Amino acid sequence: MTNGTKMICVVAATVIVLPVALMAAKARLVSGDLAVLKGQTSINVEFDYAGMTVGGKDTPEVQWLNDEVAARNGKKAGSGDAFRATWVSSRADLYAPRFLEQLNKELEKAGAKAARGVATAKYTLLVRTVNVEPGATIGFNTQQSATLEVRLVDTAKPDVAMATISIGKIRPARKKLVGIKMGGYDDASRLAECYDDGGEALGELLVKLGLK
Image (cartoon, rainbow, N blue to C red):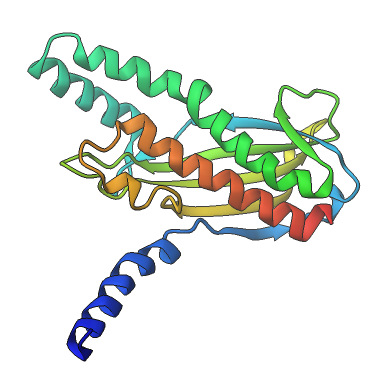
């Protein structure tokens, strides 16, 4: 192998590997203290999508969704209505399960588990979606992302945040190369990867600063 060929290989490897590191989700403690979680084995989780925005221009979801539905129905009757139904149902059917699955993989390391609807849990994590960018598939997947805010509250006093966590602009660290395959994914599948990585990032932070 010539020196020139070696250089090309190094550059190619850099192009492939560098985005992988840059896309890893980061959870950051904004305020409060997570130490209250120490010793807890069960944590309640609630998801909130109210007031979220879509895209880089922070378009209110209602406006964005109405425009998207109208555009799709204009191209093919009924397709926009089907898109709306999937857009909403994916929250409970796809995003929350994927988020919880990865969150629990991390919490298991500290002997804890998180789930929805655990009324007996002393603490609750309120996971609010601030913004999403569903991206697009034009032969390959463009940049999907999600920005989340998590509030830790006493289950009996949900209006008082004991800690606030930011998980900003999550761009999936998994399937980076697989996601570039021809055909790509639909909106819901792309965003599911964001929630997947968001759950992992949150779990790592909770274990590091609270549960251990």
